[in-house]
Amino acid sequence: MSEESILKKLADSILSFDEEVAKAAAQEALEAGVDPLKALEKGLKVGIDIVGDKFSRDELFLPHLLLAADALNAAVGVLEESIPREAAEKMRVGTIVIATVKDDIHDVGKNIVSALLSASGFEVHDLGKDVDVAMIVDKAVAVDADIIMASALMTTTMRRQRGIIEELEFKGIRGQFLVMVGGGPTTQEWSVEIGADGYGKNAADAVAVAKKLLEKK
Ligand code: B12
Image (cartoon, rainbow, N blue to C red; front, side, top):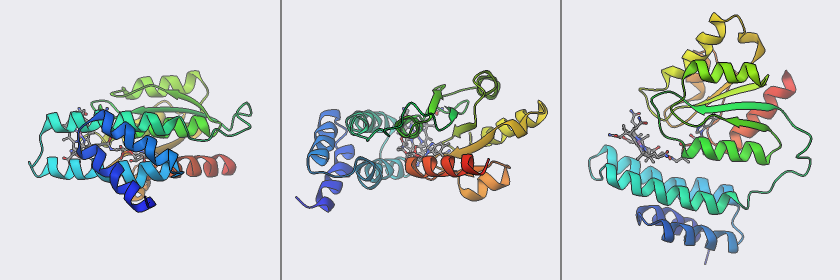
C-alpha cells in the first residue's frame, strides 16, 4: 500500500469512531515504515480535524467527539511507543513545565508535545489539563523550569495563556522563564501579542522552537 493510502486509512480510522480500528491502522503504518510523527500529523490529525469541522457544523455531536478522541488517543499510544528516544537522554536539554490551561480539558495534543519533548531529552513536568495559572507558575518556580508551555484548544481559554505571563510579571519573575504557547486556535501572531517567547504549530515544531530558545538563552 502506498504511503498516501496508509495516511488516508489513518484519517479514516478516526472517522470509524472505533479504537481497535484506529490502533490497527497505526500499527499498520508503523509496520510499513511510516514516520510516527508523519502518521500523526498527516494521518490521524486530518481525521480528527474533519470530526471537529463536522461537529462545528452540527453534522456530528458530542458523543462522536468523545468516541473520536478515544480512537485518536488509542492510535497515538501505538505511535508514541516508536518515537525514537534521543541517545543522550541523561544529558537533560532543559526543564519544561507543561499544562493545558484552566477550563480546557483538551489534552491529546499537549500529551503528544510532552511525549516528544521527553523523547528529545527534556525533563518534562506535565501538570495535565484544566490547570490553574498559579499552579503552573508555582511548579515552574519549584522545579526551576527553563520553559513554561501552555496548551489551549478553545478561543474561550486561550486568554489564560496571557494570564500566565501576567502572573509572572506580577510576581516579578517574568525574566526567569521562557514561555511557549500552542494549541488549535493559537498562532505565532497571538504569541507575539501576549508577549510569549515562542509558538509551536505541532509537536516537532515545539521541540525545535524550545531548543532554539534555549540556545539563545
Ligand atoms: C477531541 C476533541 C474534544 C475531546 C477532547 C478529548 C481530550 N482528551 O483531549 C472532547 C470530546 C472531550 C472535547 C470536548 C469539548 N470540545 Co472539543 N474538540 C476536539 C477536537 C475534535 C480535536 C482536538 C484534538 O485532540 N486534536 C488533535 C491534536 C493532535 O491536535 P492539537 O490539540 O491541535 O495539538 C497539536 C498542536 O496544536 C500542537 N500543540 C498543542 N498544544 C500545544 C502546546 C504548546 C506549548 C505547543 C508549542 C504546541 C501545542 O501540537 C499538537 C500536536 O501536533 C477539536 C477540533 C480540532 N480540529 O482541533 C474540538 C474543539 C477544540 N472542541 C470544541 C468544543 C466546543 C468542545 C466542547 C465545549 C464541546 C461541548 N459542547 O461540551 C468541550 C469542551 C470541554 C472543555 N471545557 O474543554 C471546539 C472549540 C471551539 C472554540 N471555542 O474555540 C473545537 C474547535 C471543535 C469545533 N470545531 O467546534 N473536545
